[in-house]
Amino acid sequence: MAGAVQKLTPLLCVEKLSERIVRILGCNPGHYTLQGTNTYLVGTGKRKILIDTGSPNVPDYIKVLKQTLSEHNSSIQEIIVTHWHEDHVGGVSEIYKQILSEPVPVSKFKRLSVPDVDITPAKYNFIEDQHVFTTEGSTLRAIHTPGHTEEHMVLYLEEENAVFAADTILGESTAVFEDLHSYMKSLHKILDLKPSVIYPGHGIVVKNPIEFITYYIKHRMERESQIINVLKDNDDKFLTTVDIVRVVYQGLSEMLIPAACNNATHHLNKLVTDKIVELEKDTEGNDTWKILQKSNI
Image (cartoon, rainbow, N blue to C red):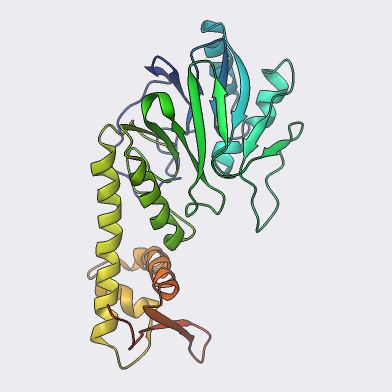
């Protein structure tokens, strides 16, 4: 799922990206899904792994997926779902009903905070970090990369030194996240893989991944520094999130203040976790923030 976007690069509905990867758009374009969710058929043989399944109730996607499998004389060996959002897991039920001749595993990491989305008639195969999937010509390693969601995973394709990044990194636009502290750690985890290419959950293929991930990290760190500086300049008092936003995002339209506050809150919660900022409720129950005097920032 994406954040703010610029004009998007047109993508083919179906495109062969390498000898072992075919991308199929989820036929669900939108503000949050960009050109549509990227789903991927992986493998060089007749039995392929499907990564993500698009949104629920999209007949065009089911039609295109079925046609693509037929053209490649292939079937689905198993399905991997990178995280619980409906534009990634939503197509599972219809794939089971309309495409599969027999049940296949639907693997993902388990959500711990709440139950996973129902995918009847399919059932989840919950896996652990570093689980390895194999099919002819392809080896995929599942790596836990929380932040966008608690159980989010990326998949490392050994044969191409490539990463299927799902919604941790997007080909265009910036990613959104539930927890910035975990998200930043996940970005560094992907960077440490030194991938040659990134196949994102939305948008174009990232062919300069090291530079791209470094920019993601730099962008977030710059925003964090701006927030810290505001708090340091007012180190004798607690500030509301709106107080901070009006300084960091000077001149921002009033309509966009709530969205900016949401973004700033992610940064502030990370800084609380990092023991740089303290959080206190004011008399009206609003979150207020202050730099910790013992912080060495």
